[in-house]
Image 1 (tube, helix red, strand yellow):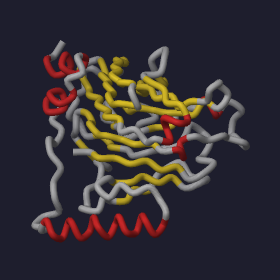
Image 2 (spheres, rainbow, N blue to C red; image 1 turned 30 degrees about the vertical axis):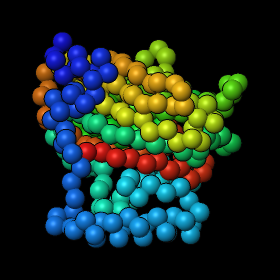
Image 3 (tube, rainbow, N blue to C red; image 1 turned 30 degrees about the horizontal axis):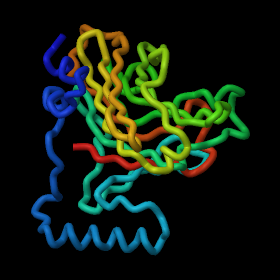
Length: 252
């Protein structure tokens, strides 16, 4: 097993992310002075206070409108945005926050079992394909409203020539109260020969999350650096979002 992924499986996200050729630090807008960044951050905090919304000025925000699949993305106060569009990255490393808007009930699903569909966190296409629904890797989440207690499930997710793949069990779950507390979870996945390797770490209250998974890659002969598409937050499955769904991201 390559050293980078051995580090991942031991929870060594800090070392593994560098081996995946991901940028190792946040960058400023070219030439922006610290006083300017501070002013932008202060303005963002004031706007959040007036609007009465959750405020994370140092984070970019995804927002999926009711009735939509695809999220819009809004830059952090310093201009930072997550990776998007065409990319030659061999993996992704980011910290993500889902809030209470990720708890949903589909009252008019496109298909009867759509409540069980997995919604997608930011990912990458693969195998020379720009369509993640055919070939690609990402993390995924869904709200299990029929369970007692209700909970959010998060899993590793990959498509191999259109075949959906997930581990037998979710990587971790969050109760409604834990979701409302907006825990910051760090996600890492990378392309490694015939495997996708996933890791998620974070702290939820007194509980530590340190989960890993591997899923098969359908094109081991295709270089990991081949051009691909970097996606954002996505709802579905086949049904669209029944309400506004927001998420927050910091990606080096």
